[in-house]
Length: 357
Image 1 (tube, rainbow, N blue to C red):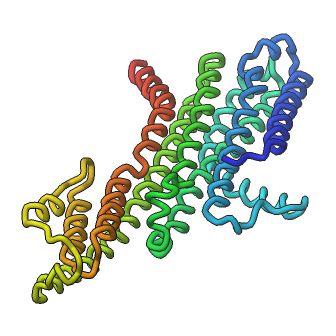
Image 2 (cartoon, helix red, strand yellow):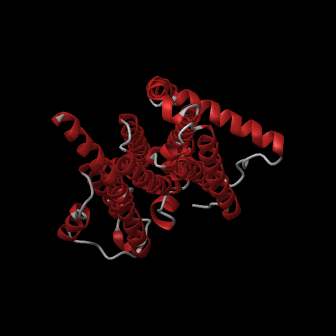
Image 3 (cartoon, rainbow, N blue to C red):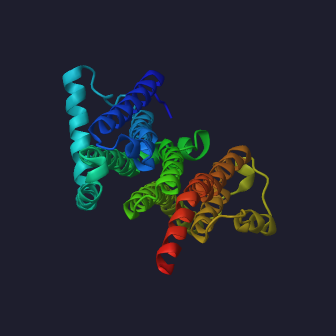
């Protein structure tokens, strides 16, 4: 992930100053300042608010990095105050709409909390509602950019691109930037989960905190699986086209009179050797891949205008395509599941507590 170091430092510094400013404003507005200082929920906001903003920023940076890797000529975040503010306003507006039900739900719960604690916390309760709103919008920014990464996969990995870059995708640079983005997003969710568990442990938390964490983890998993499956589908379609073309060649060759291998300079293969070459199945490939590979090997063996060295290269190339296809996204999926296991474990534990109450 390409993260602007100065931008990251600015976001971290701004978010901590913002959270500290809210806390000091809340302290000034609270009638009972001793009660406010000992309020863990308010105190944890100094860390909790920056955690939300940081995770939202990282999700945005991951998306921009993946977009640049896919298309280096893609427009970067606008330069200049006015274009940049317009860009942020659009993202915040979309994020706000995405989390609107949760804003309403927390607003209703928060209103009751303000009334209950008004004697000791006073108007600081209204400031806490504002903090919650910012945290939800930051969570929405995270959700939007995770899902935009999935959209980028559909836009970028079209059939024409995969056909033209098949060797690059499967062999030369097999680490897809969009699958790597899914792994990086899962790391952001792990960070978000640790901050959430800290809030639950120290301040008790609310059900909405687990909902936010659960939805975030689900979106990351959906985006990753969607990207992986889409890429595999497109690769399979391209390899199917190659298979169909090779199958037509094979049918023409079997219908044509047998050519002399002596004139082509090749050493004739016995039926047993041909059978072993054609029906040798590499470990791990699917039946679909195996069928394609058989047809390609048979068409190469029956071509008399292809020398042995070239035939070997082509067989190795297509065999490697099918083997690499079987492993596309497997290592990345393992990393994603490992990182999402913490949020999943927390959600299961919370469900158990709710079931027992």
